[in-house]
Image (tube, rainbow, N blue to C red; front, side, top):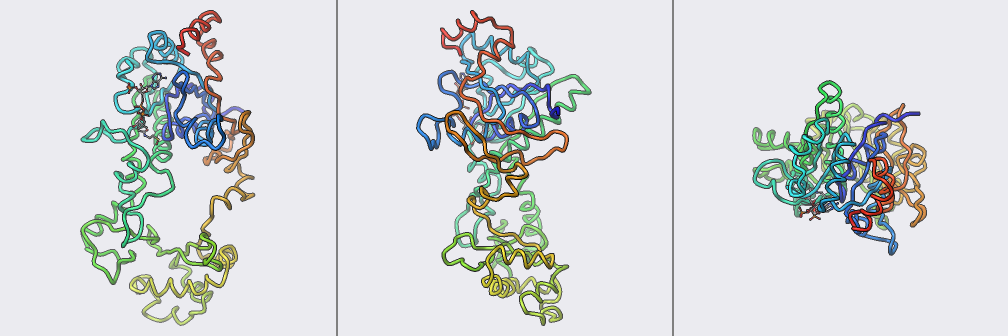
Length: 415
Ligand code: CAO
């Protein structure tokens, strides 16, 4: 069966995490992704956080599946010639270099557009135009600058970053959408364009509900579903909300049986209004169904701490999966806190290809997260990441280079 992006050729100039997540998705949808790496070194993540000496790290392998790798010194005159050939050959150039690096290499948007007017040039940068546009940015900087850190954590603690890589992988996702949209527009116009996803913008987009809350706070000075209500004063900015739900149905993380020794024996419990009666019955607090202090969502807001601590008395008597089974029986929304170990071992995630075992010639078998986006007519087969420069000769031959020319490039360390 063909793949959705069959025939689309990507010049993948990405490194570290944000850009590679984007091009990996495009590869999973069928694009031919040619990863261009510094001769002799490659993507810096090949060597970072290694668990096996001399073998590409999981950091690298898990972000670069289904790609081809070529090595190229794009700062040398001969390397630039190869790059020009690649720009002619490909549909999209994706990069996440520090601001200005591509220009310094001699490949400004104007130059690329001149070489291949159909080419889409897609970039991840830390910030969009403005005071910080020249800054280098990593994941946690984006989380801090995009509003995630100031709104994550508990009221009495410092700002917190989250383990979800919303700055890197989140921005990669945004960029991938921008690229396929630009490809779609190119079908009609025949022209390429630039696509920019700034990490600050992507994080802020994912923190959209917090900008909602800022304006609610500005208007009313209080937000009743936040844990600060009703006992504490609100300041000028959206405070950290602990584990409160970001939506209109109050929720919290509650202890389950075994919490004393298992750091993940917890469940997220949502007191969804339509199932309030059922919640009261399950926890044995039936009087709350009609008690005016508890009967309506609005009446409950000042009592959320009391409510959740009462529910926790119940959840502490069940393990998280048992609680989940019982609550699901009543359509009460809830979710167990799953550890990475549990996720790695979960059979249903293996069955859907969300967690995949991949074989690598140097490291052997390892687990990865497969394509989380499932297309019914373009299924994803996860293939191992390429070794450094594994496809250099293959790609150069495709570009029309002869064996002698390739040998000469190798001799002069351009590839
Ligand atoms: N041949 C020769 N030179 C190459 C090359 C190649 N194949 N590929 C890259 N280079 C050069 C670049 O041209 C650049 O050279 P100059 O600095 O002389 O212009 C140099 O390698 C280093 O590139 P860089 O500045 O992007 O890399 P860095 O390690 O210093 O910074 C990062 C890394 C991520 C902070 C920076 O790239 C960045 O801010 N990127 C944008 C935001 C981003 O994506 N951040 C997320 C990263 S994932 O956590």
